[in-house]
Length: 118
Image (cartoon, rainbow, N blue to C red):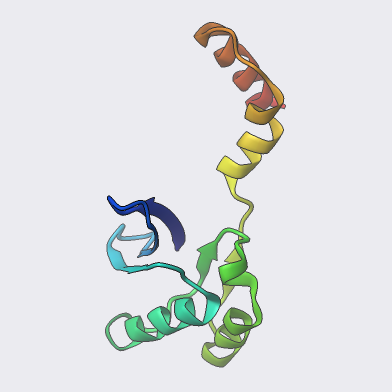
């Protein structure tokens, strides 16, 4: 389960909540709205329940949409196992990309590979 952002032609931001089954790779739902909160996430998961059962474990990043009280309560009520993983892309950006100015593609490859190995 992850959130994505995009925008309409008029510049208004939209958010997408994408829920996929890790085993089958089936996309179970894509909810689209101007904003997506924890209560909205739990509502979308509840809508999946009749056809797919209660998903468990649910793997997400540490976004506030997933860690707020509404999601914690939902996971307790449904006995779903919420597993929070650190966002790899966020860590790559924070620890490497934001820390370096790359003068060339080979230099970028060298620095990023060194970070990956560390």
